Length: 163
Image 1 (cartoon, helix red, strand yellow):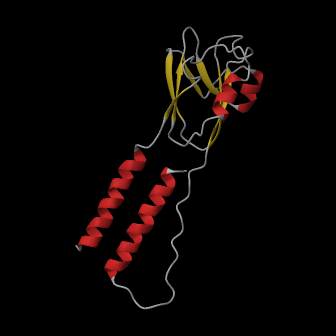
Image 2 (cartoon, helix red, strand yellow):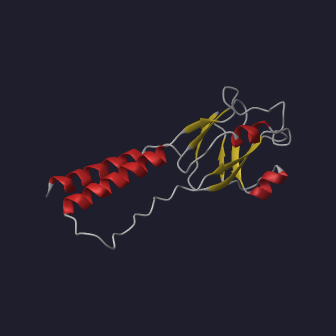
Image 3 (cartoon, helix red, strand yellow):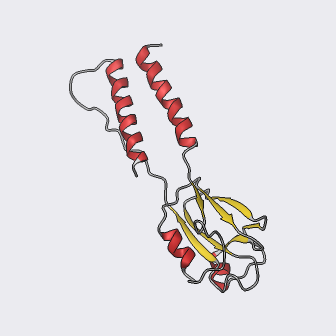
């Protein structure tokens, strides 16, 4: 195997490790946690100030309460008989496993109506840049093509990191 191919494989495998572990844990509500707010829009305002990606996690910290992931209809009614997710252990972690909207409410009667609810929007994953194929010009060696692939990969890697 040539050294340029070895370098390409090394960069590829390192990037897989990098991307698999690249997620953020958000503590819902910051230092206050998941509590009945004074402003009934507090949690939606908090969520709108953050950028959530697939595989990020939400940490719900609370005392004598619970958290449920529910449908939009259940969110609007502040009631769910069969939530998508339920936890009442005081420190719940929810993984955002897909792009789109997630709806959360408290499972304690009356708390959702008092503002203990939130909508989280998870962004679509960034699509990798398209690499143009060469249609004209002098033939290039395999090493030169591999070097171009590595450069395109590294540039796209840094682009994803700063999105």
